[in-house]
Image (tube, rainbow, N blue to C red; front, side):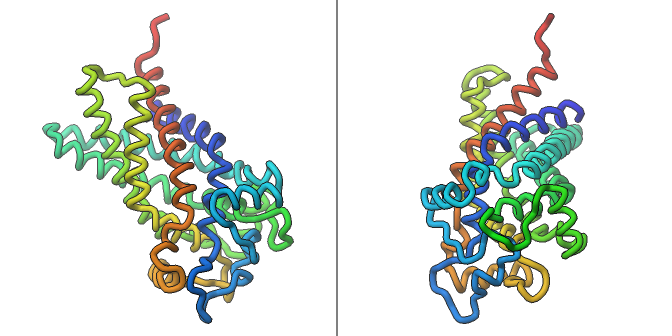
Amino acid sequence: MHSSAIAGACAGLVSSVLTCPLDVVKTRLQAQEGRRRPTAVSAPIADVAAIPSVEAQRYLGLRGTLRKIWADDGIRGFYRGLGPTIFGYLPTWAIYFSVYDSCKTILARDVAGSGEEDFVNHIVSAMTAGAASTVCTSPLWVVKTRFMLQSSRSSVQRYRHTADAFVQIYRSEGLRGFYKGLLPSLLGVSHVAVQFPLYESFKSLARDRVGRDDLTAAEILTCSSSAKMIASVTTYPHEVLRTRLQMQPRGEGRTYSGVWQACKTIARDEGVRGFYKGMTVNLVRTVPSSALTILTYELIMQHLTHPDPA
């Protein structure tokens, strides 16, 4: 467990720094209201302006969003929320890989080890690890989302730094404010329940093909990116739901009263496409990020468990 925590934390640090700009783009695209099929009952953009950057702004695709962030905030705009992102990814992946590896070991003790049983083991382990890391780190991800949505041109509810964001959210929303979007985040456990069993299966197939246990970096990247791509496409709507719920203010300015109402509102006002806002950017960001995270984790684990002889 100790090795898994160290390797997971290092992997989270590397991927968070390298992919932060695309994470900002993805978050802003997810958060904005859809222009498609506006209705009289749709909340205007100003109603959700408690998260600063959403006021009357439109982010039009990857290029348009990149240009707008650059025009509004410069290079610093692409690294908004980097602090809470780093402090979020470190414990998230440390907890995730520790719980995941521990569950796999515990469940494998009483299992004969057939392919089908191993796959179930990986699903249960992935879901347990995903739930544990999600509950433990939810406050950090709420702060990260708020940071990434605010623009330097906005004067509404500015967060000066990470500590200030924690204080302001606590004062205005209480402890519940740090757990906004927790339910859709927990529903997102389905993502890792798809991704990691697939990754383990692809890795097993690769080992059988090459005839060795330790895979090369290219082989690990291929297995992890393939699994991530499939999982992302199949479970993406929960990402949109989580972001929409986390970004809204408390009280009268609320657009969504809960997960089910958010689903109905998005479907009515934006159609099916509303559940896939920012998916292209998300894939561009998360596939290399996940592949890099898993590669870093695997290489560090190889070093920690099989150190080179002096």
